[in-house]
Image (cartoon, rainbow, N blue to C red; front, side, top):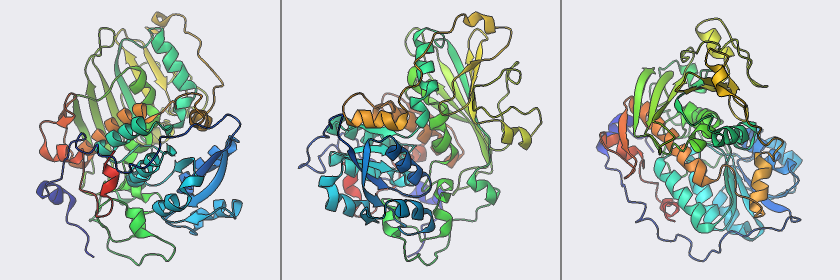
Length: 477
């Protein structure tokens, strides 16, 4: 089969089916009961989807809590080198290449799924699992499109399962500190967050010169390519699409925003009650093309005021080697939290490599805060306004990590910290940024209707192309 046409041309010609979410509320699997809670003493029967690389690490972390039994393993490249570690560790656990066959055969034996697969197939796996009453832990970003995020949020509410997105810092010090500081009013008057992720990415190896989608190669004997593709329009197999390189491609991944945005701006998004932006602006784009994410970009997400205490504010996203925000006075002199990479006083790529992914948060009165990513807490930047902060409140420490947080939620003891109702709204913001990177153009977003009002193709990308034949049923709640 032939590859599909040039991405930009295809999107402008094809009329995507943009069914409303209300129209898709027909129950896809009407015979299923809601998610069951387990007793505190019970082990949770876990199935792992994606068992190598990051997916394998997630399974290991869940098992390390002591709360899970591993009852099934699933990977579209079962037996490939990156799957060998877990296969050797759990030799007697049943193995599958297709998550649908696994759930059909072992559904009665599975309580929860770990989903550590490419961004584009988070959605169908989670949807099928939740409709079967299974709890899900899924790596970030939640899904590949805004529509898919919406549907997953609806499914979480309908099937009443524990559903956790894997931005691990959302159960760490940064989460509890940000919550306490916001409750104390320290973070009420935020006007801007500069988020930076300026390390090299996989697509930088092509230096912005990608000739097009890859020509077909023979499919490896251990590979289930059809299941790997999932609902995405057909592509011929190529090694440049798999083993992490999927993140490079607009058709499969969500780039640096999907990878790191959920670790850097998650607490600001939740506790500053940002919701969705009213505008996304492209302030810089380097190496734009129709196929993979750009070499660098600066995007400005503009959020309106939220009530009387929370003023209008921007999140400015900087990615790409050397694309640093202007750093405030006192930044380099202020010691960051443990785990922060040391600052560099060099220039260009040297700064980009040595400055940890993170953020600078600005208050209207000149106070600013620095933070890294994941669970790294904020630090007040030592400048002329720092004394205005006053006494800082204590916050909860040594809380259950993100994996134990999920286990406790499965057992009905709490809600997931990064439940889909929270993570879905954040992931939709990241998806909007990916649309701007794909089109090299900003747009206005209507927060009431959930539509992009001034760019037809961008509005179509909220949904994306229709699912391949045989995958339509996952788009119903």
